[in-house]
Image (cartoon, rainbow, N blue to C red; front, side, top):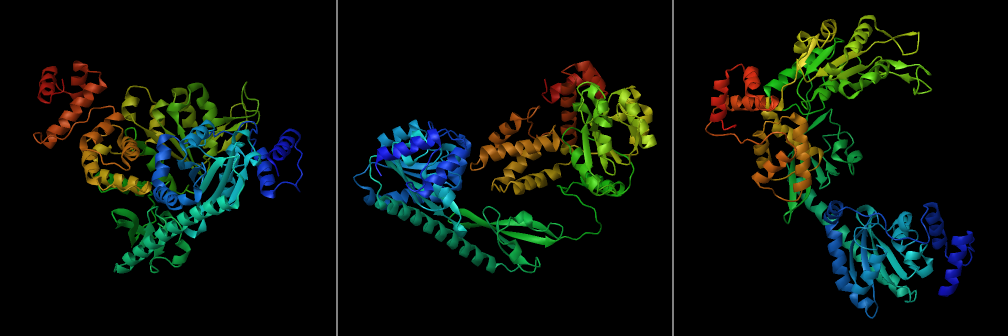
Length: 598
């Protein structure tokens, strides 16, 4: 079929949706129809979706071996492509171009239609093209000129073949792109298939060799464990650990029943200075009680004492009040109490009283009948208290609840009934109440900013959450938990722990996690200095980093921190800071000079 005939067929399909299926190949028909379904503009078709620089670099790292093999294949098979102008392209399994090489003049033209590194070339993005068809059909194909659905590719002739990885899943595509004036020859298809098979076989051979190496390592161990690859997928598991070990092969480590086994340690398995997997040590969990805590308990005595109190009060139905600084873990404890309470089968309904405008607080908590007021949902609304029926209602920042609403809440707690706004029917409710604040409710009651009668209703079992600076023994455990959750195990962990243990963490666990998130972003594949880690803390902190001084005693360090916090809280006002610290102004001036806080 001539180029002009193919152009007429394309124009007839695009303009009239008319197609003679006996003339054109079924592969092209299917792809054209899909392109229309995906609403690809046939008069356009340039690349539109592209990766950010960081995402592109991450994909390059993830497919480093495949890219390296693509480069080798070009050197090895270039003699098959002599006397033609071409671009050789490698994509990942999502159709993003990771690497391209070839004629510089052609690459310039390719950039005009955004057929370049970082852009996605799938059928849904740019219409019929060799890469997209290879990804969908898992077979090699040759798309020539007007066989492309979109005009942007009509001047190109493209051949593509999928690259297969472990278990024959498609991990990428090799594409050979040439000017459309080259004829549609089987030789080109054979060459691209040869390159793709070369890469596929090398990838599979590498996986086989690594798994063989890891199995040998596994067999050398004298105790039960789990063998995982670098992405924490289970490759082998000791049969004494689970009843059906084969059922876990190919699954993530997180699929292991953690109610029975506890992960103790992950030993990296290295080959040629590269981590290719992990030997995971586990131990049997011993429970003396059914208490569940799904978070990091750490090693500090203060936090374990708090958990012991939680364990005592959670199985009851008594109201609980949590008092702790911002980010100290009030919501974590609320979830723990709910999961270990008689109301665990019901819902945990959380309400942040500080984030709801005063005029909406009543409707949010109590709900309303349809047509109750202008702008209301025509179907009405079930309020948060009613949603928590037979479950737990968690009222965070209870100190911000308007006084008028405090009396309404008190009435519900006393009578176990509520009436929706605009309604007359009383609705029975039964729920566990957990409240939380980052201010001292006793002080608010004395200042007449919180109702005394409501205070006695909710302050039945008060639990004070220690700030992170008072349980620095837990910082190491929190860091390890973050690393495990993100499959990130930096060998400079000790420096990370050392720096973290010197910082006061005004934002508590939340601030620590934010810092660790930045570490993961900035230093996943690099090694920071201690100074760089300190700078990274200060990026998201409100106070200056102060390294522990060898010249100050522990008591002096605490005193220095208390004075600093008092100055910050009072905007540098000396009389007010002195009053807060219960010392004279002259004493405060002297200590400011002593600790160089001026």
